[in-house]
Every structure is written in structure tokens, then in C-alpha cells.
Length: 357
Image: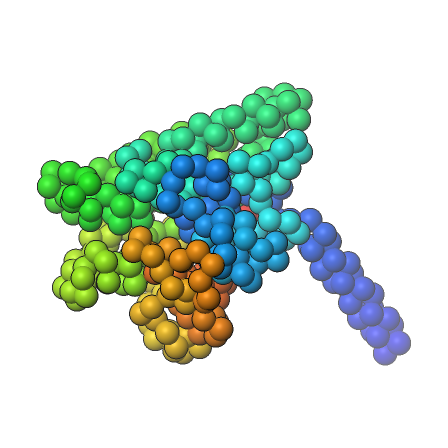
């Protein structure tokens, strides 16, 4: 009897091992499509006429392929989410994706891009969310050619994860730049949040019409607390920092409501909200971060690294890489909690791991 039990347990262990190996053999979704700004850009801005590009050292100092156009020292949050999903390669940027590369997905993100077309224009060229959606339509045409029919392409897209993260530039490079933009004189903070979410809603619904059925929508972080906001936009004025942080709260609240609305109306799809500002709340030192008010690399007046400057050595102790963007260490933390929520408040109504399964 004991021999049979041991034999059964061994068989069970073998089966569990096979299941585990199968789980790692293929990604949890066939493809991963990314829409966003500099937090997710992996090279789409490299050949644009813009100050918002990161294709020079010390950007990418800790990335396996070196400098690629990522606005951090190593991997971005979406790079790491891709790894957690089981992809053994980085999702290619739209600018260079060719042939069958697009079968794993495409990254359309562009530094300085916004929900509104004009956001970020003072920095130069950028690919707004509307343009990113046009690029996705072009990708779908290429998928149809690869897969044979429109129906096959649609069925394929229905299984993929879509990650859409914009809005920061609609504040940092629009609303809070009154010398370049009129929005802060026309709209109150609540009115502006409503206008942004109304437009965002139309854009996300268009993405649904283009085949998206599993959609993750991160909220905005505490953008008033980044070194660039504190030193440049606010001139070290603490009440100004509070004002910027307060301004994005109506946007996040309306985004949660939008997720509820989309889930209620588009019943064959699932939408989730990722609470990025909530994830970053609390004492950073508890996570090993010691430097929270300055970037690791010497920064230009626009917040990006000075070309060929020497960054800090203890990068895992810094929250910020330059004066705007987080370090790889912070991106790892955000990706982990977005994929598998540590707290119920991290994601609503569920996290990415449950969304894709």
C-alpha cells in the first residue's frame, strides 16, 4: 500500500513538473501591444526630430542591448511585464518591427506623447495616442497578410494583452506649461480631467473595435513629486507640487469609473485599472531606496540625462534615473505589482495575471 502511495506521489510530481515546463514553454498570451509615452518608449522616437529621445549614453547603461531609446538605465515596466507574461524576447518598437516580428506584438509608445495631439509639441515630434492607433491599424493589415484573413487576425488579437498608459504629458507638457498651452486658462482641473477621459474613452473604444479584448489601463503616478516638477515647474515650491499631484487625482478617479463603464458595456472584453500612484505610496526606504529627490544621472533643464554624463553607481538605491523617469529597480517593482497585485488597491477589478487568464 505504502509503495503504491509513493509511486502515485512520484507520478504526481512528474505531472506537475510537465505542467510547469509547459507553462514556461509559451507566453500566457500570444502577443502584447503597448501604447504609451516615454515610460514605455523603446526606440520609436530615435529618428524623430525631438528633444524627447534617449538614444544616447548613459541611457541603457544596464540594458542587455545597451542604448536603445529606453528612457531609463535598464528595462522598462512593460519590458518586465512581458517577461512575467512569458515572452523570451522584448516586444519590438513599431519603428523597426518587420515581418513576423509583429506576431509577438508591437510597442507604439513615444516619448512626450499624450492623449491630446498637441501635448509635448514644445519638445518636437512625437507620436500621439491618435497616431499610435493609426500605426496599430497598419499593423493589423500586416497581420492579415501573415495570418491569411481578417477573421484570423481578429481572433488572434482577441487573445492578446493591450497596455495603454498615457496622460502624464497632458499635464507636465501641456496643462502645467501655461507659456506654451492655454488649457490651464480654459479649464479647471476637474474640467480638464473630464475632457481627457472623454477623449481617452473614445480612443480605447476604437482600440476595442480594432480587436482589443484584454486591456490594462495604468493610472497616473504622483507626477508633482518627480525631481523635474519640484525643481523646474515648481521652483522648489511645495504647494505647487501638491497642486500638481492633486490635479491628476480626478483623472485617476474618472479612469476607474471608465473601467467600470467599459466592463459594463463591452461584455466580451475585460478592462483593468492599475493604481501606479498607490503602488508608489509609502516609505521608499522600506524597499531599499535611499535617494528619492534627485535623479541618478546629471540632468538637462528638460529633465533628461546630459549626454555622456557619468551616472551614480548605486542605481538600485535611486527612485529616479533622470529627473523624470524611474530607475529599472522601480520599474521592476511596478511591473511585479501590476502583474500580481500585492494589495487589493494595486489593481481593479483584478491584476494582469488574472486578466490574461
